[in-house]
Length: 213
Image (tube, rainbow, N blue to C red; front, side):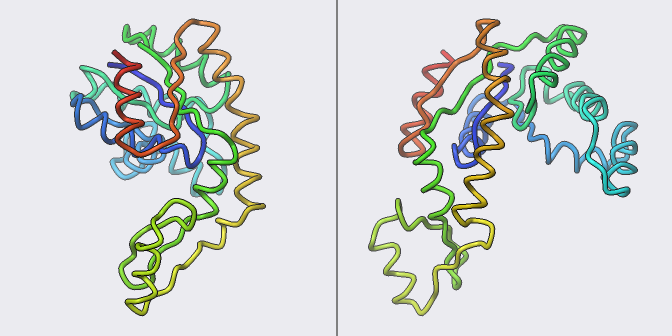
């Protein structure tokens, strides 16, 4: 199984990727984790990335592609991978296709975790953390019993500063602008699979595995 997982912030793709990785015994390769690991390990492209990050600049596509190539060459990725967080643009999708062709490991599918904008907004703006336990809750989706238990225990429901509606709305809009061309790229190559990602984690996972066959 070699797939790219696409999805907006709040779509649950990270959660689903971890479940899929455990079940299928293929690595969940998150771009951020991969970048940090390459820098920590001092790989050839990791060293280039460190110099760029230390200078306060964004890591270029060619460096990221090199880091991905290094990661896909590791033993645990030989039977497949779940790529999360890359590609983010149409050019990155084209570059990734060319890289996978060179490695003779073509992509099986690009999976879009599809959720309505309004649901995403509630998932993200409704996030709260219990001040006592650190448990993550949601004022829209958690049960009233769970929410009341926090207050009953003397805790507070804390919202992150960047989880306000304006900031989240901007993040989602940027995602939509950048990712729609990527979605169309894979749709045009008959590789796109769309999964309804609205619902309980296990329900969504059942749909995901069914879509992947």
